[in-house]
Image (cartoon, rainbow, N blue to C red):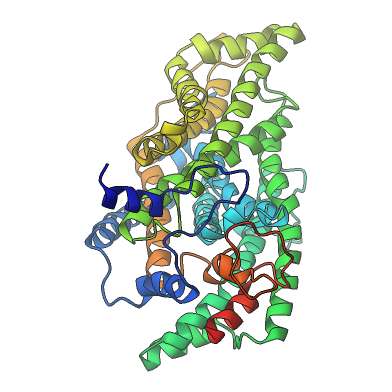
Length: 495
């Protein structure tokens, strides 16, 4: 390796562990102004990389396909799907649970890691929060359309109506409505409020009147005063505390949709922790899938570093092992129960007509994450990216196996059937990805994808010693603001 290559590598690699000092989270010797420039130039640039336009065109096309399929479904009926007897739940429920799971990593990174004072979250939390919002938007479509008569969806909400009819609060569909709507509301507040200081930065740098007005409205009159920072950080902490039980409870509620039934394979108490671990697993995998190409195309490798990717790969490994333990526990419980129907269900999953789906699930969710025991794989972005995609594939198949393979062979062999999705099923699923990526690409282009104020708070310049010198990664002192925004702003002004 040449001297130039070695220097470049040292500027991009912060994965070595030195017990005497904490590793730098931001590389390249950047100042506060450099971080602001790196993040804001993406929003301020008159054009964006060509790959963005190509991706946006594809995503927008798929979003149009989603709209066409939903319209076709509403005008024709759910007979256009591959549902049959006994498989009354198909792609709609599979996709709903999949997208809700994807949304979990955003709140986990934002709220739980914030409360645990994990400073490495600052470069990726905004990214993950946006992913959460867009995944929940995609998830919310499917409960509405799977009931068939979409024009009666307002029956799900406890609002007065001319029929004096109130919702059935024992219905799992009602639990989903309240859980997902509450989760979406808190997540959106958390995401937007965290962006306010950064939106004000873009407002102050704006060169045109239109941008000043738009970002001025979005920043809600932010002046970066001490009072504003104090109110902001208290509110952020309270929202984090509120979101933490939500991230655990929402997917537990989704798992209750299955667990309250009397169907073998579903009626089990392991579902809530099993679903939550799987949701964190798939959510982090989606963050990695999205963040690796983004940091490359937008030149953010010194802010979203290899250490961030390695930390996420370790979480994927840990949660993947939890999911693998849940798979094994399910088989053990089926055998230990002595219930022949329960045992048949799990043997049918592994060796029946849908065995191909089961073993895809096991391969992607249990075997692939084992690569991350090895540092060279955790630090290889191509391997990490490919593995994260396979994890998402595996988690979708997990939902498919839970829903379809438990339904297609019920108590009466004469009623057994085989579910085959139709083209409408498949196109609706692909269209949901189109909607997700359309929203996500717009976010990358017009909003600060990295929390500048938070990132500055974990840089050495924000932690001055008693001589007024910047720290070198060993941040042991207390600072008045967790985000470091006020301290960072003062340091930037004085510099």
